[in-house]
Image (cartoon, helix red, strand yellow):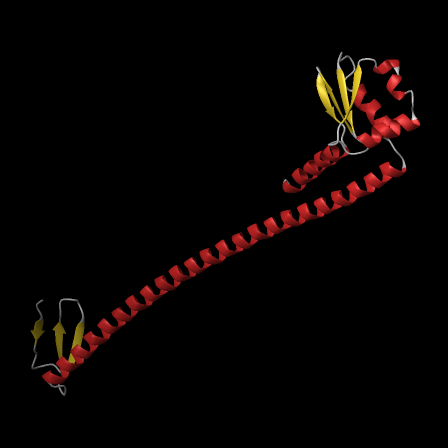
Amino acid sequence: MSSVIKLGRTTNVINIKVSDNSSFGVSDNETEAEFLRRLEEEKSEQIFNAGREDALRELKNHYNETLKNKFAAYESLIFSIDEQLNEYREAFDKIVIDTTFLIASKVIQKSIYDSPIITDTIREAIRKVIGANNIVLRLSPSDKALIQETDVDFFDNNSYSNLKFEVDDRIDAGGCLVESEIGNVDARISSQLNELKKALLTETTHE
């Protein structure tokens, strides 16, 4: 780096030009040492200002990056909380539905005990397999005994000549299971309640 110093005896100011196009005025009452010191101070100030700007820029970038990371973390946390709330809601819905159907099952069982409906259930189930040649109807021991007591001609009905009645301990009172070569009919109370429960659970899951 080169500097050109022009000294003029006939003027009161010395003009100094440096490579960065800056010019400084040196008055007659300023010694060369004072001028150089002032020049050094000004250069130091320029360096300091440039360094401060770099530091501020770096600090700003760091702040923005930190803020961005914090925002991403908060967004992830909110999403996680939302997922947990959905899981809690689904679990709560299932508990409500399970409890409701448990109560409904008890009510239905009591209703069946107070007012037997097994003959109507059997007729409705058999109607769904009309045309079958071989039909097996499974019902609970209590229902068969009840039918024999209340409707002695039920099992001797000519309409059921191709139907075989079998007692099955797995069948709850009030329901029956029909088996034939063209298909089966599950008219058990528990099966019908389970199907309804599945439909409700599917409905609440898709909401």
